[in-house]
Image 1: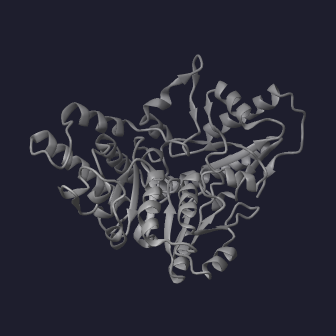
Image 2: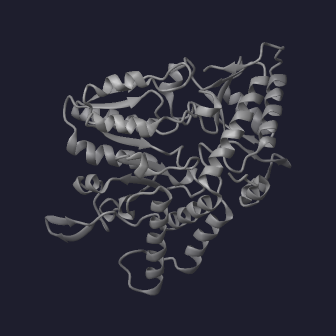
Image 3: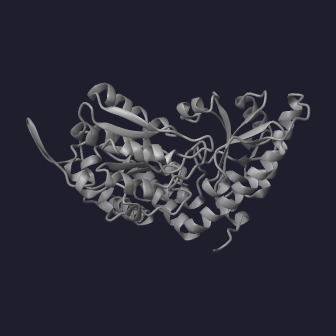
Length: 420
């Protein structure tokens, strides 16, 4: 396994050279919210706008042909990156949230009726909860939830019991954006299929950090997001098995999702264009194509190994800080996410003091309010790591947390520990 040259990688990301707050170097620990972008991604998008900016698919002039070629070439690269069976199974949306909503609105409204069961989990992002709440109110479907254990893992015994009730769909995250928990999705998908259910996976936190092989997982639907994997904002991806996508009605109506329109009727286009109405995010797709090339060249196995080693170090250092409580499982079962509380200090205050020292972390419920309620807390501070972070970034974070203690006049207390 190759070792990442973090100093060289940092130089690939122009923003990481920035100084904030009167010359304080930036330490970016908020990649679970959005990752930074390497120069190659910025250059690819800039080149599109400067050299061949045009709309795609229908133009026959040189710029349109170049734009269409670059756009569809990016789809092919993204398809290979996650090992989809074919590029036409890759649908571009605005974000992972829209990708999940597409499944709920199109597949859900066609296939789910009153009393049908959908299994979710307590660790889901709101994006994989609210669409199903809306459908439950509209159609009367039933929702059931796999509990999270005190260690931050899914209760798989309960999951298996829920599958005995013959659900139509199981929808769950590959990796928790709060706990960092990496779920055993291949086994969970296989169990869902054995019970006659389809499986939808929220992979927004997994695809940027882990090797993901969609065919090996055998996911029916898999959603992920460009901006968390070194790509631009405003772009999400829905993978769906061809037979399922072919049977689903269009999500939106308009240009490019039709073959023919007459007064009073239309003929739907082929995949993937059937679900891509209107002018798409052309520059963003091209940018994501560059991002997956960048990640593939580094190697997802190497990125995952680096982050696992880094989160192990981070958890050890966080335990040194009195009053800090980290949520989630041990490093071997999680990705590069450390969500924590600080005794007697609100997470927003923690984040604000850290920001004054150049350290960017997230504070709040991270669009996972039910999970925070499960642990009887309203918010956490969250440090999240990526390929461009190293031990020095962790050390700066720890120094910042001791400054938090000093600001709030904390006396020595027993060392913090993981809630798991």
